Structure formats: C-alpha cells, structure tokens
Amino acid sequence: MKIMVLGGGSCQLNLIKELKKRNHYVILIDYLVSPLAKLLVDIHLQISTFDNEGVYLVAKKYNIEGIVTLGTDQPVLTCAYVAKRLHLPFYLTEQQALEVTNKLHMKKIFTKNQIPTVKYVLLPSDFRDEMIKKLVFPVIMKPVDSQGQRGIFKCESINDIREKIKKTLVYSRENVVLIEEYYPNDEITINGWLENDQLTILSVVDRVTINNTRSVGVCLCHNFPSVHLKTNYDQIEKLTKKIIKAFLLKNGPIYFQYLLGDKGIKVNEIAMRIGGAYEDLTMPIISQIDILELLITKLEKKDYNTSLLKKYNLAENQQFISTQLFFCHAGQVKSMTPIEQIKKEIGVTYADYIIKPGDEIGSINNATARVGYFIVTGTSYTDLIKNINNTFDKLQVLDQNGHNLIIKYKDYNQKYMFFSEDSS
Image (tube, rainbow, N blue to C red; front, side, top):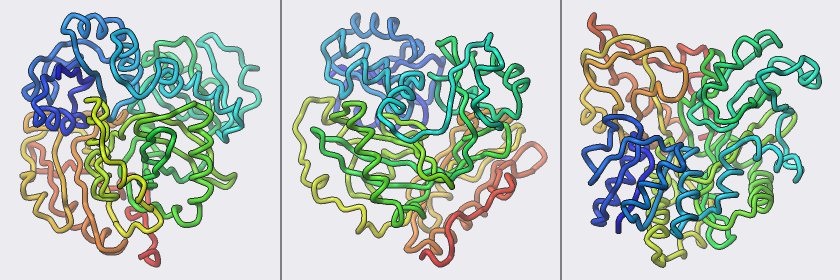
C-alpha cells in the first residue's frame, strides 16, 4: 500500500519502521528539512501536518491508499480531512476529529453533557476584564488547537493574561484562547482501544509534569499502575464511557487526560490517538496487546483477532513500568552515554536520544525540549524506583566543560519518586 504518515519525529519512528517491515510505500509529511524519520521513508514532503488542504493536494497527487499519525494531536484532524475527501479508511469522521483536537468544541461538548471539567472561558485578544470575572486566579492559558504544551502559561492576574495572550495565539489558528482555573491535581492518562463501540481500558498511568516553572504541563514521566487506579477505577471507567458516548466515538485508540484533586475528577482533555510518550512501545508490555498492530491493521482494512481485547482485565494486571522522558539544562552537547549502555541497565526495555553531539540545547518551553527517553520495568514499585534511579545514575549528556546537563526531578523541587513505599 501507499501510505502517508503525518509527522516524522521520535514518536512516529516505530510506526514508520513497522510500515516498512510490511513493505508499504511510505510518504512522510513533516515541515522540517530533515526530520528523524527522513532516511526511513520512501519520500519526504516538507509540508506542515497542520496544513489540511496542502496535505490533501499531495495525497491526491500521489494517489495514497491510507493516511495515519501517532503521538501527536493536530494531525489527527488532517488525517480525517484527507480521508473524507479521498474516501480512505479512518476511525474518526472529520467532525469528530475537530471535536477531539479543538478545545473550543471539546469544552462545549463537556459542558453540554455534564462531563466534569474545570471552570473556563474563551477569550479573544481584545477581551474585557468582565469576561473573566467568574474565574479565580491563578489560571492556565492555552491555545485551543495546538499540541506539545506550546503556548501554555500559568497567569496570576488579568495583566499577566494581557501580557502573554499574543504569545499563546501564535500557536493557534483560532482568534480565542482558553482560560481555565488552575486546579491543584494529580494527573492521570487513560490509554485504551475502541472496537465497534466496545471499550478496553489498557492502562491508567500517573502523568507527572512540570508545574512550578513557566513550562506548565510538560510531561516528565508516565508511571504504571497509577496510584489512583484501585481506589478510582470504577469512576474512571464510568467517566470514560460517558465521554465516548458524548462524542459518538466508535473505533480507534483513546488517550484521555484527567485531573484528580480535592473536588474530584475533572477531564483535562481527550485525544483519539496513540499517546506521544511511546505508548506504542509500552502498551504491549503492560497489556500484551499491540496497540500499534491494531492501528496498522485497521489502516490496511484487514481483520484482526480481538480476543485479547475481550479477555484483558486491567484489575488483574501485575506489571510495573515507567516511561522516563528526560530533559537537559541549556548548553551544547559534546558527548552522551552510549544508548546501548543505557539499554543494558536492569529493567530497561527501550531507550533513545533525540539529540546528538554538537546540538545546542535551549530552555524548556514545551514538550519539544525533550532530549530522550527510556522505558523501564520492575517487579514491584520499590524495584521500579531502584531501576529508574540506577539508570539515571548512568545517564550523562556532557557539555564542553564536562558538566552533566541531565535534569533530575529533584531539580524541579518535586518529589523524585512518585510511589509510596507501601504500594508495592
């Protein structure tokens, strides 16, 4: 098949490799001159994955037979847009794709269907003070149609919003921003698969983020199982099914983010994609269900065995796994611990860098500042913690002066370990 993939970054590498293993002709769409996946594909077209019409025109020109993305929000809408016009298989309608990628539409559906979410307003750049009088500061300002924590700010006052609103709108195609009351919380992510209306929740993970700097919401790691799984599972499952019904979702991967705080569970946002924290790699470890296989097989319009989905029981899962997304202080990279050495550490199943020697690392403004990842398992919470620490002890990204640029969680004044010792 001739398949178009939107995005050629670290998150899409495994998808592209798998498509090539199946002897598909892969056309990559990525605005960068030299994306990471450039040498893996048959052809790379330097077009923005946000450019619905531009992608459609080249998809038509090349007579593609399928279109897909993974690990990134906005290209889901582009996929649906192109699929509709070329009569290609895709698991969302164009309207559904808009609703799960644009918070302007998403929040309205939450409100209409009494799905719990934090208080919010939508503000134009020329807003009046009274438009946000019902909200209590601090607030979070976000673009309604971006991704990767771009343009997100924690604001302490109306003047703070006025100062930063144009910086947020830079990352949006709409003329409004989303303002939400800040809700102190633990964040969890729900990963699952929908097959003909039938939901299988594959994992509930703790999504640990940076929240005490300007880089609000940038993910540091995903830890399974969530410390909230046992006590909140029934409520999580009920809420997830309610969202699926409200958005009329039928098929495909789900990636929902919830906030747990003193006022209960609030829905942060939802997405219909395989997650960008390498869930295509972690889901088979956690659940023995290859969610990437499901995505590709559906793309190929082939039948697949759904018996594992029907048999899977999250409550009986005994796995312990963490995806560590690591960052660096600013500086120029001289050398790094060889990735093969990191892969030999106890419990490490996958690891890779997104940087190379000679690269200049800037400050952390959003998720694109990530410099690498490793996925590690353990036999218990305590064992998982030990394996994470041991791996970080070996991990070095050195600058020209021999300083290790790797940031550990303690540098953010957060708890370094996120599991209580009595949870094992």
